[in-house]
Length: 389
Image 1 (cartoon, one colour):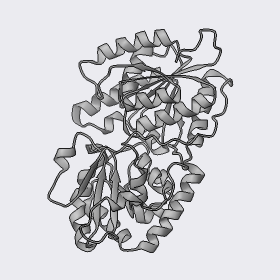
Image 2 (cartoon, helix red, strand yellow):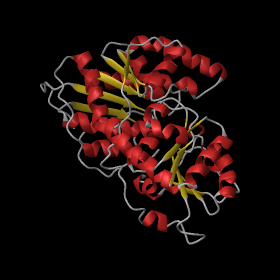
Image 3 (spheres, one colour):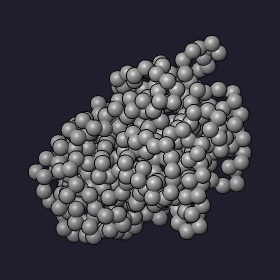
Image 4 (tube, helix red, strand yellow):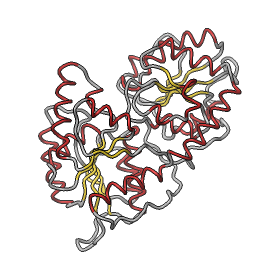
């Protein structure tokens, strides 16, 4: 959807790779809010479910062929972005996550106001010489970002400790609390089969099946939970590169990628996200918005996303299966506590992590770079599409 060359409204160019999971949902939410606020929005990304959603929202979507991780194809990806930027002529470029942040900053090199949003630091995902190289790049690349937007204060501090000296802004993640809301378990719970007690506790983990999300830690903890909570069931919702490796002897259901995770949150008695690293994960916010308690690991953004009352019950060290098993077991055995924590989590999300707050804070960042000619985001319209983690 191309606008006339004389259209005076600012154009924002979002660059994103990956195109699934939390990063994609943030891009879709920002696009929706910015279009409603009157901005012209172009998104450059690989062809995907995200690109179809963005087109339906009314965004100008440009195909950018790019792999998920840096590699030999990077030079060509940067060249394609240079041509794309020259064609789109945006007022501001907003690059999301490590890969698009790398290619986008190399392509633009500060010639246009640039926002970089890491959504968790690249150097946390790797080790050894690769991590050292990623740190050196982030230190160098910070000069080409007019703002580096972190989704939590903890993520910003992680960057500072690594020697990244940037012009910072912190915009906590937000979710649509009208879409993610409490409801009866519905057909999802009934579809789990007839084995055992249909009312037995159900634990759900929503996330891409990969090392970052730590499903292997949850699977290591699960035998201890199952011994202490007979009949408890575990469902992993999502797909990813570790799917086959994660399959084990325990009777765990792999639901695969789903079009909409909301019914799974609503069906759960407890949601678990045992991540190894994050910036601020969306799954705990989504679970709390659905009135469900969540057990998550003490990684960047976790303490900031939980209300204080949930921290003693719901926060565990990363990569610690016994601690994870103890926290999950304690909550499964205490339905009244789960109910109380679920209500507190919902109230917390409504007060501090509404998607409209995140959109307005992002608009403030843009205004600081472009001036005041950017309208406040409108209230989000209801939608039912999801990019699954």
